[in-house]
Length: 95
Image: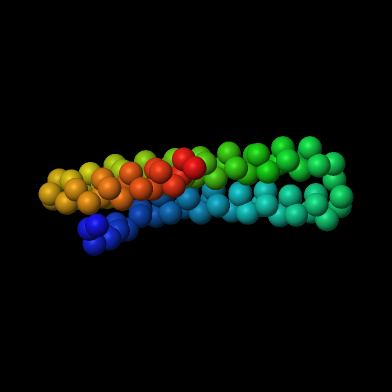
């Protein structure tokens, strides 16, 4: 596999990703509170599903940026190792 190179995210990209993660963190704290307060299990499960969806959206956003930036750049420079890495990542994400 090729040596890993990373590009620096723009301030806006970083801000958007961090905002998503902070919202997810807040959702997790809400679930913890629900468990602590012995809330109804189906209500907790619905909140967990919401967090799962938020994490999937985060992954899609980050993956899109990675493909459009890092993978395309590596391919342009003749390094096709990023394709194998991408396929491996997709395999892990789709478990």
